[in-house]
Image 1: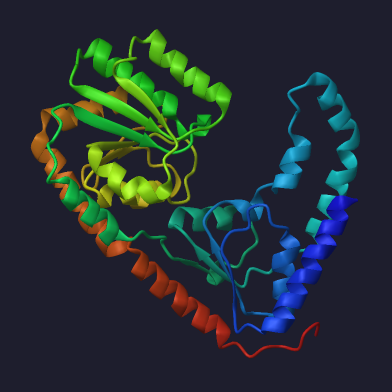
Image 2 (image 1 turned 45 degrees about the horizontal axis):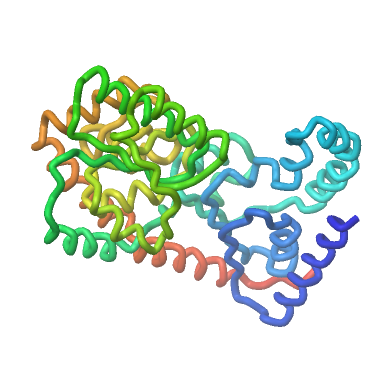
Length: 348
């Protein structure tokens, strides 16, 4: 019943805010943990003037409430209790989803890959969807790299993974590749730093992989680093490993690394293929292919001229296509187009 009350409160507050503020256009960026009723109410009160910026798969994925009631509890007794009561909240959620059908009249997609996924998994009109790449403050990262160039350079090749330590991010593949580089190729001047945190069980699995492969002197778990510190952190490394098995909409991490003159070696799942191009802006490998990842890293060691070329190409691509000023300009244009629609009468 608290879910029902929260839904009503969300709708009432959304209505009151819109009726008080009287916006020309409503921009919906992130829907994580928000009821679809919020977006639905916006569409009712501002028909044709709601613009969505979609950077994940939420329009066709279960919302967090559904995921909670469908997932099993770790404790068997709690799981039994959860399963016995789950049908009621799930029924309420499904009823709300039928009520809160969204029109999605203006949809900005973070990548072509995400746009294609929406076309395959939703009924959104293709003509309503446009691609607007996300972006970063390239100047901030480039300036941080220039400042770091005055510092003494390390002799070892320094690898970085930065992100969540969860299975679908493929971090285990990176450690397995390190085992190939150290134990099979007998490389000594190489080091991997893992920045981030995640599920305790998976973190324990990663640490056991390090120990089993005798990599404790080659792999360092740094933990979480605040996002605002990333421009100064990235120049300390030579290569970003991006081993995701997940259909990434478009990860900013690759953009930040390229702007910081790191070579990106990664998978090309989802939107990543739109920025990471084999032999042009970085090196690629299939998901969970540790041998191929190791071979690509070794290429960078054996061919320093290739590394320089990849760095220059990637930096140019990020500046030209993934700067945040370009993103803002494009979003503002789409918002202005939606705002020019003549408002219809509320509840008409």
